[in-house]
Amino acid sequence: MQFTVAIDGPAAAGKGTISRAVALRFGFRHLDTGALYRAVGVMGGDPVAAARALTPEDLARDDLRTLEAGQAASRVAVIPEVRAALLEFQRRFARREGGAVLDGRDIGTVICPAAEVKLFVTASPEVRARRRWLELGGEAAAKPYDAVLAEVRERDGRDMNRADAPLKPAADAVLLDTGDLSADAAIARACDLVASRLPGKGA
Ligand code: C5P
Image 1 (cartoon, rainbow, N blue to C red):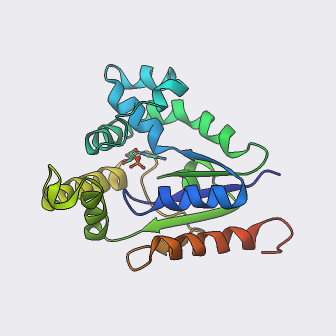
Image 2 (cartoon, rainbow, N blue to C red):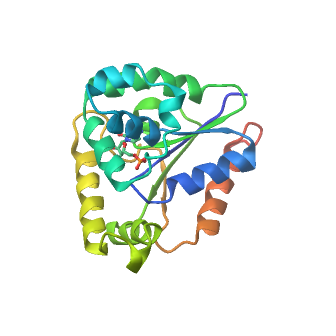
């Protein structure tokens, strides 16, 4: 069975948590497409050459989850040749037998416009910045909340306003605002949606 779940949305909206849980629940493979851009961003040098030569080892680096890697990712992500170099790999992953969940910014709009399920996960910049800040250690974090909020806003701006594959919900995406939802409640809604679209469910 080929079955693609496209999960898009801004940084720290809860895409990763929801995607991993959906993949586990339905036995689908999961691809965090942000890791591709983060790996290209932290490699330095020519980003187009880095994207064309990306290896599984590059995706296993332990410095991909930092705020700096996120900023570097969003800077290389505006380059059309970088996006083009990463496109085929993502499409092949999406159509693998057994089902796939991909999370990112342009999965439902550009990478997999025919995905069986499209979810756009969002929350206010303040809610998302607070989550990131707590992940970094809250009061004990090296960065104050205001600095994290400024970075979230800067990255949102770059992701939403770029010319190539900007962050926006696909016309047929289901919107999920996680601002007032627990992680478990958000996961339950996503799983209900996927279950309703599985072959044989008639949706
Ligand atoms: O999701 P994550 O925060 O890891 O993504 C890092 C950056 O990579 C995003 O801010 C965005 O600029 C870029 N990205 C993208 N398209 C994707 C996934 C990530 O442009 N499908």
